[in-house]
Length: 241
Image (cartoon, rainbow, N blue to C red; front, side, top):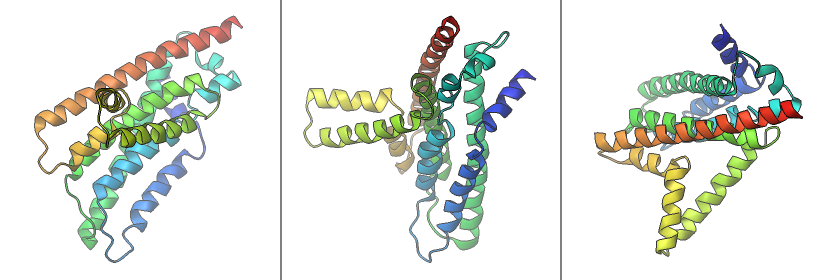
């Protein structure tokens, strides 16, 4: 019962969250209107549900509660900080599963009817989108503990732009330092480029897919562990104050 209540609380946390899902679905539908639009549907799903959706769904997910003092109400015995973090991560993950199923169904049905766009590696794009979503959601939740309100959204948007710019600028002039920096960006932060390259490859090997799944799992575990420790520290500090 406690888990169900926490899942429901995660879903109903913001009144605009269902609207976000509907807006993304509307984007999928509207892109079928132009006559000869060369859309790669897998890429669109990757960007919308894997990259943008987690930033919106996790905006202020802990920062709002910490700023308002509601964290003191949520984190009470027998509920621990780690449980709260994990249930909220599960809550936003369930939202993605529902969104991906609905979005993929819309795309596949309309493609079958209209034959517009391309569905190359569509299942792999869905898998990579899910991995990217989970890594960004767990990182965003952790960042939300460190900033007030919903500023984790802006922090992550700024971080994406900054790290993307660094990667582009370091590419034309490879050195040991620049290659090391780009490697850190690719492997320590949500692996946008690595997952995009995997899903976009013509003949992806099962071994490469397994490595990306394992890599994503390691990142999610690391972000979750850091977030749990930070949440416990913040909540304990509020109790002491």
